[in-house]
Image (cartoon, rainbow, N blue to C red):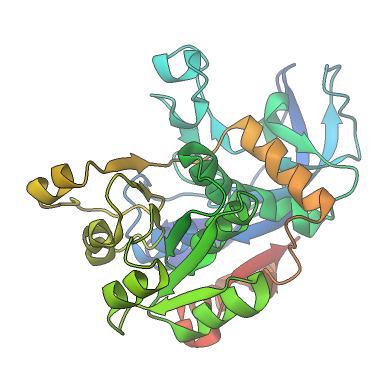
Length: 338
């Protein structure tokens, strides 16, 4: 079967590998139909992803078709279109026992810690497959990326009407916005890229936007009548931005780090205590988040039509991939088609 390896940063290789020879009774054989390209894949290509070892088969945002599956209690059968929950957890550690399989102590994420979906066929545990009768294969490939924002927002529990700042209007920040819209919070988006701010306002309906280059504290004070946002989500994966995000939070507020950086985040402790901040990390998502996202997309509460801006056939991905890192190409979400 056709397979793409990332041999080392900046170097993909298209080759042939053996199809799966069999699968366990609690697994299914699936055919990969769509692969969403996310920030993890881009960082792996650049050599900036802290959890990855090379060579690696990337790909964890997957829309797939079931080829073969045994008897199961989920009603899954050959021909079903499903989204894959790519977080392979142990089921027995302290996190798993407490319902937080997304941060299992021995977690393996497809395409990061173990080989992923940039190939024609893979085997997946049945309980990691999420079916929809309504969603297209493109939409199913978007579910995992939307789950990232959904988990962050569902974890922090914003209240209707409170000011919520999303820093970074890239794909992950946009998923936070999509989930936050369902909460009824008043959303502000901040970025240095005006094109991305325009996309958030024109395509996702965000009313308030701040360019970080233009006195952001002053603008946030004005927008919030001097209070500052009570929730701040940093989705940049940029150390400077993450360190500065403490400055944008109201007293008693919550700061959520959705993006990941390969460095140490620092803050001024007296100011941190003075405002009694709550600082949270958000990692991956849970099965409940997958169901929540699918329900929202099925109902039309989340509109996926603006999301996919770039496409490539599997055989052309290696050629096109470097261009997806160039801000001038205005990539929101690139999808690889098999």
